[in-house]
Image (cartoon, rainbow, N blue to C red):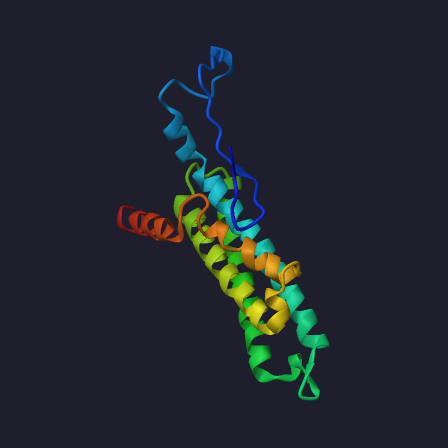
Length: 183
């Protein structure tokens, strides 16, 4: 059953009834599904953080172009200090997001069995930062930022879902706190 969501992300519910899987094709023992699924979270949380960096990067690029080309009150938007501050904040948050994602991915690539804290931090920060970056992009674009069919409007719809995938932002905070308090 396809789930219709705000962003154009292909989500569906699949139910199997009477399905038989040969023992050689099983990923684990019967009843181990939840444990196996939880074991993938470090990888997928980092991946969601990386995808959010992509969304944020496009929002920043669109905002730079808009600030340089759009004129208000006889000047380019890029000449106004508040626009400059918004772009600076967007670039800084994007860079910090990338660094957290790179660190989580690098540590996993180095063979560390668990990068739970790093992946939760990367996912939390990158998804929250992407939301703020896209919101600033909408502000910089003004009315065209919410015009259906524009790049920034599409990003605005797409940026919300990653804050939910692989555990909400609130869950990421709990995961981070738990690793801090129990290590």
